[in-house]
Length: 120
Image (cartoon, rainbow, N blue to C red):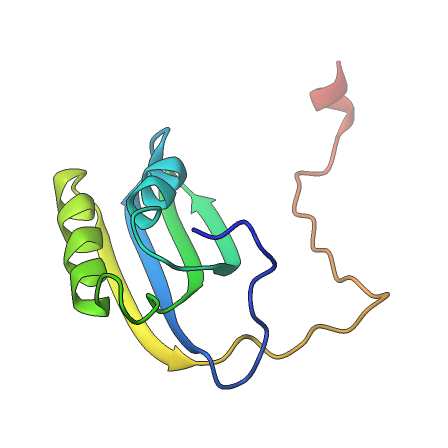
């Protein structure tokens, strides 16, 4: 994976790598160790864990021509996920997410309200 700034143009072939299954330590590191053998840039990542289940999405550039093929990357990711009893879905596309607005954030916080009994 390249340490340089990832390309943000609309015409770059991309792959959305989705990993899901039972969460455990090392899944994110394992995915990026697996992708490190390919000439890809990470454009975006998202991760959600709910009730012990992980959904990890990495938007990456497709492997550079002249190196390993997209098919080899797909096979390697699927083999890695199967070894951990996880599932993978890899979706081809073009470009990045739409640009996000600057200066604004939307944050959702979920919690359980405190009651007199819960603080005692």
